[in-house]
Amino acid sequence: MAVAVAVELRADGEPGRVAMQKIERPDAHCLRKFAESKIEKGATLKTDGWGAYVSVAKAGYKHKPIVTGDGKTAVRKFPWVHTFIGNLKRMILGTYHSVSPKPLDRYLAEFHYRGNRRWLEENLFDRLIAAAVGAKPITCRQLVTGGS
Image (cartoon, rainbow, N blue to C red):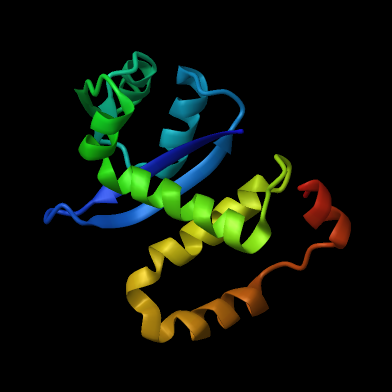
């Protein structure tokens, strides 16, 4: 299952918001759709040197490619992306044990909901209750099949 990940970096280099979304294929078209839905136009994209990101940047973003060469360098150059990916994997393995493709976006939504509110810990429970009460109910079938 391919998942696109974007992490906002604040001026101090610390992570801000995170966005994750299941994509059909890891190609320029799918990544561009993800970026357009999650990232504000004009933002600077720091990416690895993969050529598909050039097409994404043409959708109205500044682009700063950083050629990493290998996995260890990628972790050093993009630590917050890898931290969030690692935390997601731990959540899945520790809580759910496995995830099938159809409902994956629901698991990702839970993860980035909590991740984007991590600095609001004192209000998190109240906000979660408000979100749960205000959410549209879904059937068991929708939950299992990932349908709407």
